[in-house]
Length: 114
Length: 113
Image (cartoon, rainbow over all chains, first blue to last red):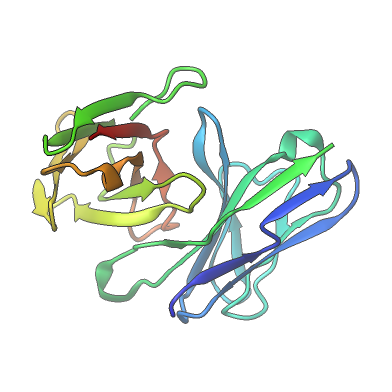
C-alpha cells in the first residue's frame, strides 16, 4: 500500500530536549516536505527536499532541521524544542511525474512541548 | 478560504445540495492549484488540481473553477454527502521553481443529514 508514515504519532516532551520525528514514504517520490498546522494559520511549510541531499527552507524553518540521506526518509529534528513548537506536524511526499504535484500526506504527529 | 483569527470560515449545507467553497489566492505568478480535504484526525487528502491554462476541471462529483483575473478558485461538490464533511484547503504553487505549495487557511464544510 502506497503511504507516508510518521513516528511517533503523539509526543509530549519538555523544553530543550532534542527530538526527531521520522517520516518515510514507499512511493519512490523525489519531493518530500514538512508542514506544521496550527489553528487559524492553516498548513505552513517548514522544510522541503527535492531529492536526496537537497533540502531547502520553507516559510517557518526556525528551530527545525532536516536531512535527506535516503530517498524514502526525511526526518524532522528539533534540537532544542520550545513551547511555541507545540503543533500538529505533517510530512508529505510527491512525484514530479506526469505534471502532477499531488502530495500524499502522513497521518500527522501531535507534539506538545511543556 | 481566509480565516479571521482562530475561526475557520464555515459552510453548512443539507445532504443532497451542491456546495461551493471559495478560495482567494495570493500570488499572481501561481500557475498550479490543488484542493485538499482534511477529515478530523487525518492528514490532508488530494481532491483535484488545475493548471493556470485551464479555467475549469471536473472530477467525480467535484468541479474546480479558476478565475485568474481576480485570483479566485472555487470547489464545487455536487450532491453533497455527510462523508464530505471536512475542512477543505486550496493550495497554490509556482511551477519550475521551488515547487513549494502554499496553503490557504481552510473552510469547514458541515453536511446536515
